[in-house]
Image (cartoon, rainbow, N blue to C red; front, side, top):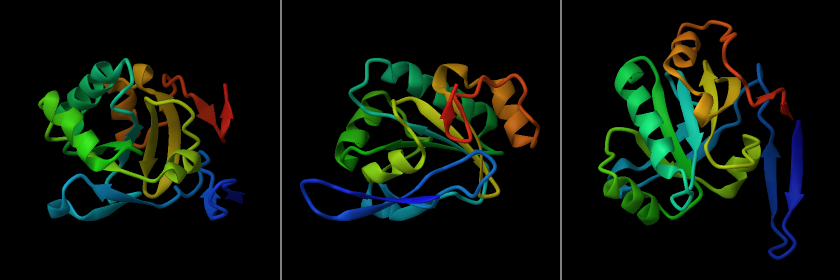
Length: 168
């Protein structure tokens, strides 16, 4: 499904490709936090655990801890990605203040949040082989869920936030 949204103030149209479980993941370009790292895309080669966040949110420490711990346990088999629509320098400042360097992070346009149906920060999208496998809240993202996701399982214990774009 493709929807065109027109911004009231700018008059520019922005294409929105809505992510749905079992369907091709919308491609988004990610601006790396440093020029040295350039630009990259989602979906990637490995299975991806993509978490949308903001540096200002109250539970940012909890979100970062969950992702860093999971990356430490499963980083060889999946790519853990943090995305924000904030300026790269603000994201870098937040991550450096918490001494986080191994997790891949980047800045995206607000349309990425819309494409992936992210309506609050801390929501995570599971993508493998270019297909959206599920949407889950960060507090429900556990090692057991990630293991099942990496192994291509059904993830029956995952309390998914949305299925086919419909909130539970």
